[in-house]
Length: 97
Image (cartoon, rainbow, N blue to C red; front, side):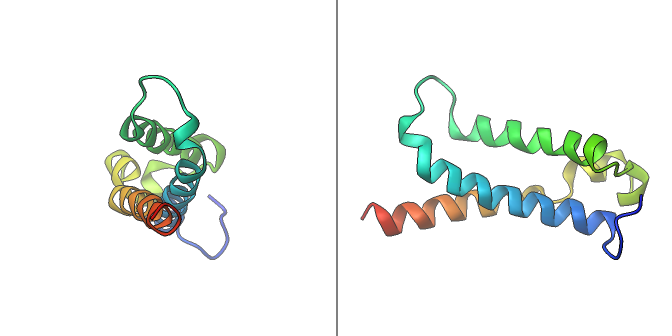
């Protein structure tokens, strides 16, 4: 892995935190226009699971670089969901009150 000066586990963690914040903004903008039976948590979970494949296949981060396969799955899970909910709730509170 040649990611420069950043460690692989930092890239995974902060990538998921940023993805959660971006997802919160996207949900704020378009959620009221989405029909169907998908719930927000299922969409967020799908995006989180897709991030594993983005890190593994696109960014070429090996599981050994972050401490194993389990760590590649779990690193940043709290930051992702916290930033997703925080951003979505914060924007909704400011603009829909």
